[in-house]
Image (cartoon, rainbow, N blue to C red; front, top):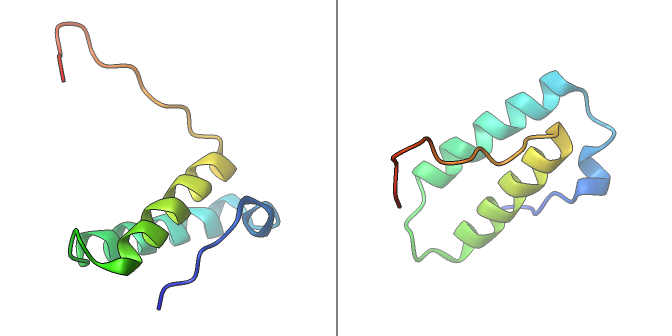
Length: 66
């Protein structure tokens, strides 16, 4: 079972620690089946890490349509 890390827990970490956690959870996400129960927890934790790091969603480049 994968632990969900909250923003409150993450705020006490350094940028380096957040970066290492981000990389770890990206690896977990890539090694987890799309329908696995832990995948939601992993993705939610990644989102929280990115928020704690101050990431801003990047706009789509010109001419790129999703």
